Image (cartoon, rainbow, N blue to C red; front, side, top):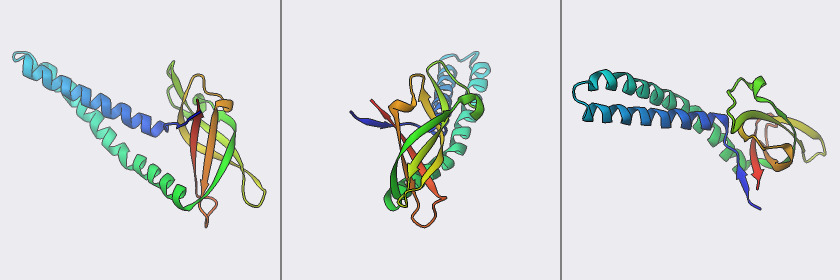
Length: 159
């Protein structure tokens, strides 16, 4: 059985904006190339919309990269604990649109630190499939050795 890391909502939003922007710009350029008489009327709004989507994706990228870098640093230098998922905060409380295939949610995890204390932590928003339950998800909590308030959670799906 292989574990797979769940994608954060931030990464999913970035990919949607990036892919949509590229498709819109390419489609607008293709219309400009093939339809010479009406091309400016069609090309301009489509491509401008695509450029807006691309700029939004570019604006989201630094935060996505920072989140990934923090997780990588804590994986390398931090303390690692396996956590039990105690609950999933539903999407209507996290203000993210739910589709028929997936939704977003914040996972509440419980782990036991080296002193035997059971601590509750919350993850960032993750994209969840409709069939995801607490039983088929697991989490790894990475905690900074010097500051227990600095942690990152990697959520994995069991196949």
